[in-house]
Length: 447
Image 1 (spheres, rainbow, N blue to C red):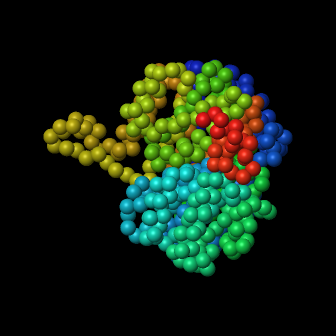
Image 2: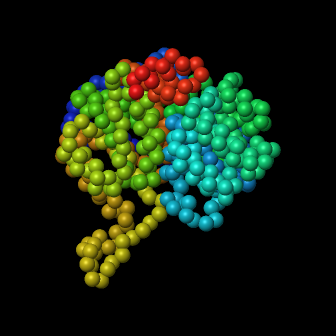
Image 3: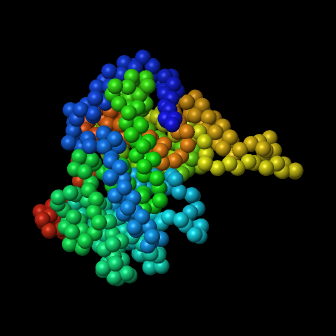
């Protein structure tokens, strides 16, 4: 099987190649620190060797659970927030037919999402939809008390029990949670739900290859074996023993580190395959939560081309020169469509008649890259042979490994997120949660 490729040659006009390669030793040391668990946040490095540690027994158990549930439902609702749902959504949205929700006779359950917001209209509209659907729930939370998913689970659990009865509902709910403690684990034991464990040493944004991602993806009909195999192969390719110039994770981390040091502060993940929209959402959490601390870090953003060339394109071309553009390119689309010839040629497109739509898309991609580089935006190109589970497994592990290396090169702990707690404390104080009485008095004096 082929592997993804990375091209950083369009960075050299902004930072010298020698400067990037001078980071090779530190990048390799950072990769070694991840593998040997000697760096910052080493109690959350279970993801590093996770792909190769997944056993056939693990996969078979998940497949058995998925097969049992799939027979009885039209939909599965994944309840989680952040890394507890974004990895699943990244894979599912990338590999699902764009208009699947409008097509009758679906072979596999559609995956729906809850617990990633507190929108009252969203939850009402979701429950109204589920009134007419047979559905299962996969609820994901280490503690079971995270506000957003806890609210959604409380509402949907009651809805499902009312719809099918409490006894039947227990066979349609899977809990993915802590191995030893927590409100969700206690509920699962009391109610008799099938449970899977979120490893203690794997943080949410690195958890897609744990049951957090594998269980709902298996229920949705995706090939989790291929996803894991892609990640296993990328684990080998990005090992610290691989030479720097052949290690895509080290190259990516070193290039973006040197660009950051040169004054680039925003990285845009761009694609010309809009199916990758939620892959970019997953990537934004991975890099934003891992690097954005201690007053440091590249701000991660994303665009879907060519649509966003007609909205964000002007700024990218001529705005503040703070940008890095990382472009994901897909070599081979899954289908083929040829542009027809028109006798009158009123739209002036006969010059591309007979060409595949993807050929035009590729020229738009190349033209955009050259224009943006000419406009002062360095470009990093990541090429995938095609979009399938195997190559997504490669891509996601590549980004995870590069993120850990980048964080160490930046000098931060890439595996904590202390800033995320700030809004929670304010919210609990404003809601007058028990135990937050003093905080409640203080914050109310400010509003």
